[in-house]
Image (cartoon, rainbow, N blue to C red; front, side, top):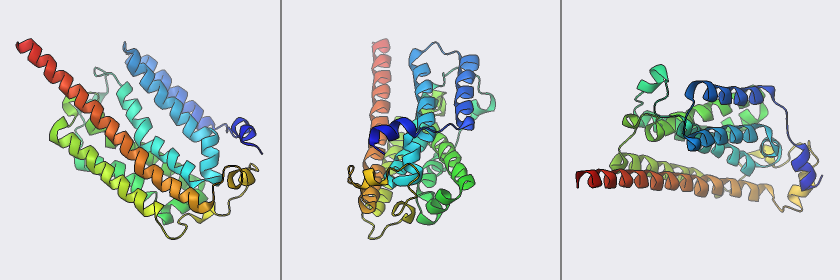
Length: 260
């Protein structure tokens, strides 16, 4: 199968994923009714990425052929999708008891980084890949861990967030160090950590294309996956840090202008 054919045919219909995404979109429209176009776009983008991560050709590549595709999916589930969904929630949203949550930063940090680390231990990763119920648990725990992770940084109520200096900066910096460490271990491993990708079941007839036209061997696949954990993850943390400081500096400048 050619690459173009695969990209057209490897979409999977998963009712739970489609219904869940549409349901969350309806919840946003009915409950939040944000007047901010930016927030609505962030929420919709998060749901679109969630659907793509679990039902698009990326999901087929991740679950069948390539560890690096699986890593990309995990990064979306832990770092990108939860952040977009939290950004999309209006500050005045009626969240009930959730609006009063003040999660200890250490617990939130461990929830996100711990979920990422846990599911890339070969024993647990390989088990999830082989057993679909455990695979679903993996996805749900990554989403939940990512949401808890971002809460001290992106909670809808600003008073629930960490102060930019030094707490939030340290929170994000240590996250980058942790993901870098995991990425280095995977990238420079002397053996294949995830053997299912060495001899995958060629469900879509793509193996020859991946090994030939794409030039991705099992060893290179693992190295790319480790690099994804290493570089793009830190880029996400860096982007969050820069955005946070820009917002903080803008607030400080506005207060100074009022006082003047």
